[in-house]
Image (cartoon, rainbow, N blue to C red; front, side, top):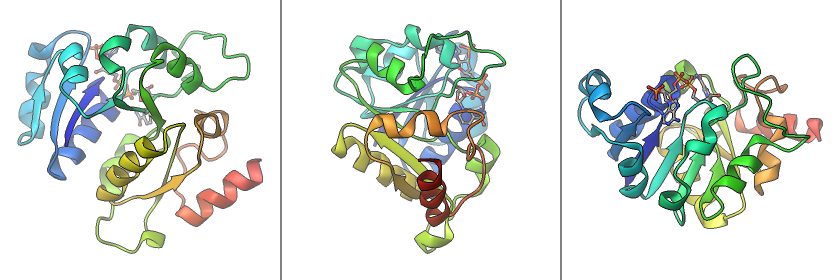
Length: 208
Ligand SMILES: NC(=O)c1ccc[n+]([C@@H]2O[C@H](COP(=O)([O-])OP(=O)(O)OC[C@H]3O[C@@H](n4cnc5c(N)ncnc54)[C@H](OP(=O)(O)O)[C@@H]3O)[C@@H](O)[C@H]2O)c1
């Protein structure tokens, strides 16, 4: 699968390496242009190339968003229209501005901006080092860490669930996009904790 990644920092390059290792063709991008990504590309090696944000969006079947949430309005809405887009972004109160969420989840703002995209919230709950090291491809689903996903397009959720499986995590499908928001944000109870799929489901039920 062709996967574009917008944001080539901790989470973007970690995901790029894992997807490339799983056999996908990955494009990584940032706001400074492909030349600035030469070191990352040579470190990750096979399967990854540098691209502009526009190329990473236009060439891909699936696009992962891994930029600071405060920059979400710079995302190319037209190029992402019709694509499966994974939102891995969280609001970090230490660096992101007050986005006027007023009780809404950050993915709802992203969905408003990317109104034509098939948005799935996922890959936002594990710290990048955990994502890099905790995948157990080939192991029993119940023994893996659970990785929640949410989105309004069932087919897009199913594609993203397949990617999560390939990386050795168990997808925990929460259903609609709003289900993946407030409870999964930075600072929420289970953010960045390590849970089996059964524990993830239990915690979500307890959090209402
Ligand atoms: N770190 C984690 O463990 C973790 C885990 C789960 C979720 N997340 C979420 O993932 C997102 C990224 O976090 P991170 O820790 O990977 O941040 P990071 O290391 O600071 O990387 C951010 C990347 O985004 C690029 N960028 C910034 N503004 C951009 C724009 N307008 N267009 C394109 N690229 C842009 C940056 O490069 P340039 O500035 O050069 O463009 C950089 O490559 C955040 O929303 C965070 O909440 C992080």
